[in-house]
Amino acid sequence: MGKQKEWKTMRGKLEALIIILFLITPTLFSAEIDQLTDREKYEETARDFTPVLNRFTNRQLEKAVGNFNSLFDTTEMEPSEVHKQMAFQIYKATAGSESDRYSEEMPTRINLFYALGKSGHGPIQTWIQREENREWWIKLKENIYSDLYPEPLNQNYIIKVAGEFLGPDKIDHFFDQGYSYWLISRFGENDKAALTFGVETEIGWYGLRAGGIFSFADLRANWEGYRFFIDLFDKEKGHLTINGEGSVEINRPFDWTDYIDWQYDELKNPSVITEINLKKINRYIWNHYDQYCETYNYLKESEILEWASKRDSYYFTEDLTFSNAHLFDFSTIMSEGDNS
Image 1 (cartoon, helix red, strand yellow):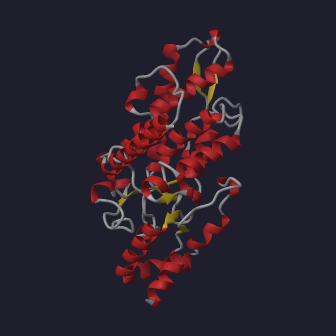
Image 2: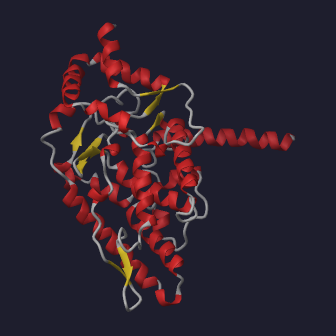
Image 3: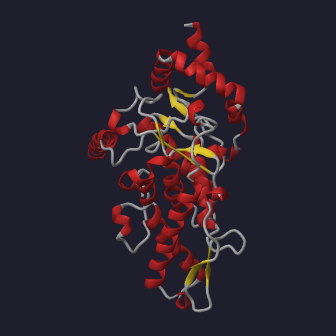
């Protein structure tokens, strides 16, 4: 019993140290994206990034297919093995960490250390945030998370894709967590296991436990990525096929409009936030009340705040509860600020 207690103490200290590193290391931590601040200023004027992002995404898929064909001969493989190995090549080309990109084996465990090693800066997300794409960004230095995260971590990039506003992190979630869902679910056989894993990550190291925010928009991106990996070789919905020579080829280009909807937008699909963080956000909004009052009037008139009640129920498992956590409700915050 003594050794077991000592190990638990050591593990607790190690996890605490990891959390500190997680919070202070920009390469391991991706702060939340604020799609509320100044919404009225860019809602109608932002440029649509979809065609540019589609072209880059398809180049990454072409790279993954090329890598697969250089490594494998499908005539000697079962269809399920082709699917698994091809999915891994796509994951590496779109969202994998540096170590994943040089690995020839699919990860066998998805835990804290693995999550920290690959979190937030996959090849596509990194490319989106490069200077060459700045004309497509909305970048808010001052935003509702300014009092939550140190300035180097509060990199609030917003892009317009498929007519919706989202953070580049959602693209990473699509390929990264979508792939994790696929592995956890035994390659698409157990949806509930995938959903439960997603909820656990948002309660844990990708959400409440690390940054104090549980993002339903993240879960939406995860789920759509999961669908993508399941349908990879589907005759109607998939993007890949095996040709007569036994090589994999792309039979239908990837298009983000097939996968992105309003639930990627954290304003329309608001997050659950821990009490202490919600207080900081409230205070920030109240301290800039006139600015947010203008935004609120625009959102109210355009009915953008009404979307939250329409979100899908697939996010939840039966036992989903939150302790000391609250749904972000901009209307309530504004009314409380007006009365303070």
